[in-house]
Length: 398
Image (tube, rainbow, N blue to C red; front, top):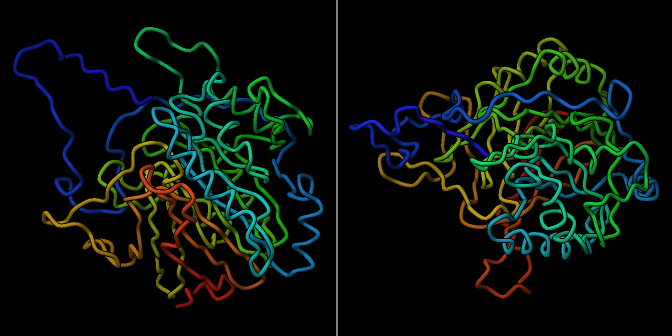
């Protein structure tokens, strides 16, 4: 939980009220941290060997074989899912994903879900894994892999009790088990077993994409220390050239919401690793901001890199977009001081999830929203945005 301690709270003349919306700070997709948040938390020891790679075939061998024979793969992507004060949005997103998991596309049905962090609010307690993870996805038939978010790794502090459990302990137990088939106490009566990720940051090797998942820790804007930065550059360099490289991180590089904004810190982490490796990622996914946003960053050579925020996965409050001169942003929108960045689309009024299709040439992303709590829960997910990237040419397909 973000903690904002003020030593002047009891002095006269220092009242504080609402936080100004983003238009008062200027409209930039990428800023230094807007709030302090909690401090960097030490990482737990890895449960697997360096360089922390997981082959998807070790989790779902039959589905991986089917991917290879069909020439492509299909998956879900979510973030910021834990339903802490109101479980209904998370349950509606889970219901939408369950519906979508039964629908076969060009490359069959989705085979797995990837989570970009904030599984458990407020701060990753083991006691909340059942209500916020195992129970909502009880009937979701696919494995869920992913990286932790700031709330998964923060130290719980309710003003009275400070958690003495080391950061990320419950995440490691439920996502980084040393052996397959481990059924954790947190799962209780749900049969889902823990994932076997080798570390809180790791590379997921799939037949049609390499997913490099970072752990951007707890501070607002993220913090990645040198050992993980070096690993990141090494994994970019080692990635197979015949597959796209998809980077996942919790704190987004670009965001035009009115609450967090994107992170200049994370932009520097990506740029440094790409420069060191001499290899560029093809696409970047994040969460943290509780809505859906899709950006395109275009470099001097005309290469296009999508940056997608998928934080509308079920945490109860949505983050509205920033306003410009008192007016809502209308996409496409290019921030005045960032001519190479375009906000292509956003959804800040509903919860939802992403469906990806990836083959030897194209990455397709579909963004779906789910019904509001007052609407029929039987209503199917609604397609809100689509994107296709030819990853070989690094160009969007209109």
